[in-house]
Image 1 (spheres, rainbow, N blue to C red):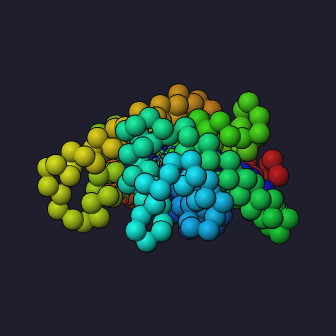
Image 2 (tube, protein in one colour):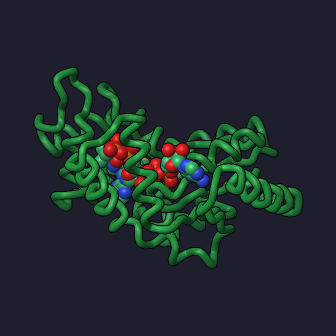
Length: 220
Ligand SMILES: CC(C)(COP(=O)(O)OP(=O)(O)OC[C@H]1O[C@@H](n2cnc3c(N)ncnc32)[C@H](O)[C@@H]1O)[C@@H](O)C(=O)NCCC(=O)NCCS
Ligand SMILES: Nc1ncnc2c1ncn2[C@@H]1O[C@H](COP(=O)(O)OP(=O)(O)OP(=O)(O)O)[C@@H](O)[C@H]1O
């Protein structure tokens, strides 16, 4: 089994790249999706977040209010408090799933996608990502393109008024300010530059996929 970490800043295109790898046969775990699942009512992570941050983070329907949490995390400087609750649970769940998969499908290519693989403090050693992954893939894009993609994805086809657009851009910049480590690790990664169209991206993903298959063949 080859364990691949797929990282890159917000809006760089990681999830898009992850889907392209999945189409080629990789098993992909999205940390954002897993985090969201573990934050559902009834989960220990949900309970811990409500106990720590108080009832103001609970929406009317009983789920966590992600806008309130995003404000606390990215505007009010409390992101580490949230990370300390969510990250250990996500990392443990990924380790559990990967262990099960290794037993059933020892030849699988597993890809774990997250913007925070290099920065999270919650692995089991001082170099958590080295222990968790055999190879790292980094997706990069110019800063303004990352912000534009984040805004367009959040708009989901709606026309934004200038205030909404400015608020989303500020949110993107605040999150990006916490993701400065990724490109500093470029030398340790297979890098996919996502500064063109989707056809170009598909070609670049194909080249990296072939490289990963070679590694898997020679380092089983
Ligand atoms: C603050 C929360 C509720 C905001 O939710 P929201 O739906 O707006 O964003 P979502 O979770 O889809 O994340 C979108 C992007 O924001 C960025 N981001 C999310 N969490 C973080 C963080 N802790 N540090 C830096 N950037 C982050 C990433 O680029 C991510 O891909 C949520 O992001 C969260 O709980 N974050 C803390 C836990 C975490 O790190 N989750 C992500 C991986 S486990
Ligand atoms: N090369 C591209 N051409 C056009 N659109 C793109 C390209 N790459 C990504 N996108 C679009 O940009 C948006 C952000 O991409 P994606 O969700 O893959 O980024 P991400 O790195 O996973 O972001 P986040 O960390 O915020 O989850 C999506 O709407 C995606 O469809």
